[in-house]
Length: 437
Image 1 (cartoon, rainbow, N blue to C red):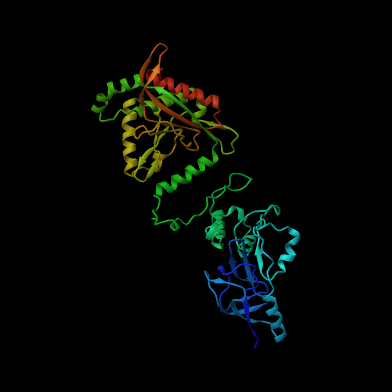
Image 2 (image 1 turned 135 degrees about the vertical axis):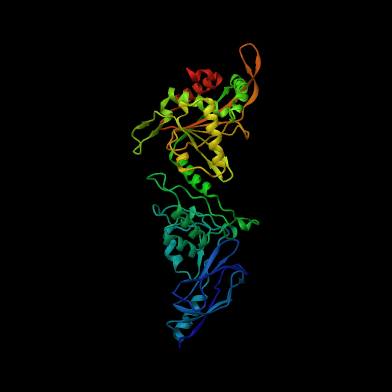
């Protein structure tokens, strides 16, 4: 029967009662020579205690959180190949003192790697983590040697991993979560690589949390919005339209609309003004081809309108807005918005849009940056109108001003075209009669 040996804490310099932060083996495990048994961490450095030979762990004398000092027994092991002479040599090996630890951890040159590997316990120094495309540089990643080896095996650069352990220490679980994020990450931004992931954080460490599932609509719309944001180079143009006369005209016809059972909202007029502007600037009513080499120009005007529902944002489409009057649009807008809030929309209601409008006027706020609803190339954001003083050349007069925010795909619409579109839309809203010309 092979001899049993005691694996003890070697000379660790001036440190006393060093905490064990990792126990890397279990009872019954077979270990290779120089395979790490435990990890210690002091205020100045971390170090791992390896097995002096190939052996089977028979008993562990320590656990995570224990504090040990030089000479303490950490494990009882049965050497796979052992004689009395070998045991004597092992005893001498485990007692070999560690290199003196400096007050501050210093990077170790590559030329010192061999001598460090020959030490009985390896001092954790902040060397560069593994990188598939680089082997140079120094990186202060707070991780144990076993975690560094684990990261190397998976091809993970530790500088990209956020540690969740004590003092920001990177654990094996952190590396595993990082790999899972990479695997589940959305499509890459191009040939240069994937989008940097958001760090995985255990929020329960900071207090009580509650997990609430996203609605099906939010899951679907979230993926679409994410794809739109990543694939479209956005530019947003801002302006304010004077709708004083428009609002007067709307109120004058509000009762007539009510008799027909419809609500004549400002959005109805905005939709007609948008169509008139799209006819003047047809590039904003187009879509890019799949190969991104030409524009698909559309001769129809279907306006998507963002509707806030209990389950999330939906964008039903009003078809052929250019062929319908104010009352007809108001009736269809009211009906399709109600069905959206009741969850009664069909797939057909959400298809075929050429331009979208997101109106927050009923809630509040002014300017914002709406996300283009691909495959469309532009979207209008409408804020809450307010009365404010406007200079007419002689005096400041009160005018009702409507905030406008137009986001567009910069591959299709350049800044000059975007500005012309917003200016023309402003003119249509300032005198709604012009949409009839």
